[in-house]
Image 1 (tube, rainbow, N blue to C red):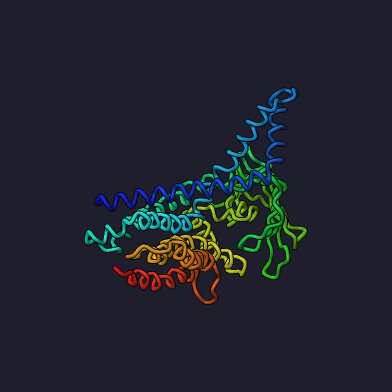
Image 2: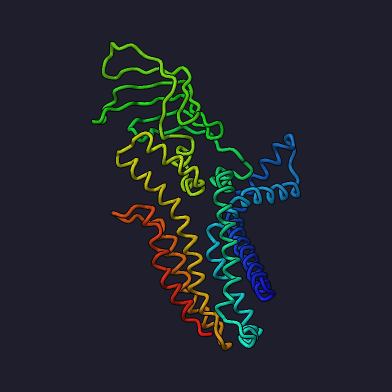
Length: 380
C-alpha cells in the first residue's frame, strides 16, 4: 500500500472503531438506565450470600453491580457488532470523507494526478477486513457464547442455562417428546416420555425412560422401555436409543428465541443433515429446514449488502469541489438505510417458489447494478 492508502485506511479504521465504541456505549447506557434496579437487587443478594448473612457495604454492592453489568454485556456487545457492522462501515466512510474534504485533501489528490475512484481502494480494503472479523466473530465466537446471550438482566452472573421442563414437542418424524427436566448444560433429559404416532395421528406406542443423554445423533436411554398403545397384551420391549432431529441445539433453539441466529455455519449444516438423514417430509420439518437455510445463506447476503451499501453511498462524498457536507449526508443517509435495512430484511424473507439459497441473494443482486452505476458516476 502507498502512503496515501495507509493514511486513508488508518483514518477510516479509527473512525470505524470510534463509531463502534460510541454506538455500543449508547446502547449499554440506555439498557443500564432502564434495568439498574434489577442489577442492584441482584448485586445485593450476591453480596449477602457471600457475606455470611452480614449486611453488605454500599461499596461492595456497587462493585458487584458493575461486575454484573459487564458480565451481561460483554457477549452482547460482540453480538451487537455483527448487527451494526454495516451501519458502521457506511458511517465511518462518511466521517473519513468529510475529514478529507474539510482539509482540502481531495483537491491535493486531484492535483497530484490521482483519481477520486482510486481513493475508494483503502476504504474497501478496511471494510472487507472488518467483514472478515465479523465472519470470525459469527462462526467462531458466537456459537461458544450463545448460552450467555439468552440471559436477561435478572440472570446476570449466571454462566449456565437453567434446567426446565420440556413441553410436548414434535420431531420431524411426528413423534411427541415430553421431559420433566431438560438440562441444556449437561445435554440430558430426565423423566422422558415419547409418543410414537401413526400417520393418522393416533398414538401407537409410548417410550418411557428415566433419563436420556445425547450422543452422536441420538439419545441414549437409561431404563428405556416401549409400551404398545394399540395392543394391551403386547409385552414391553427395551429401548436403548432413539435417533431424532431434536438434539440439544434444536431444543435450545425452540426454547430461546433468536438462539439459532448465533449458531455457526457448521452447526446449522449438521441440523439440516439430520432432517435429510431422517427423511423428514412433513410440512413442519420442511419449514424448519428452509428457515435454517435462510439463516446461513442470509448471513452472506447481508454482508454483501453491507459492502454494496458502502459502494452506493461513497460517491456522495467523492466530489472534486468542496461543498455542503450536511446536504450530502442528508442525501446519502436514506439511501444507506434503504440498502442496509432492505438487505437484512430481504435476505431473510420467504419467497414462494424460490429456494432459500437463491432468494437470500436477491437483495445483493438488486443492489449490485446500483453500486456499479454509482461508482461509474464519480466525476474525476
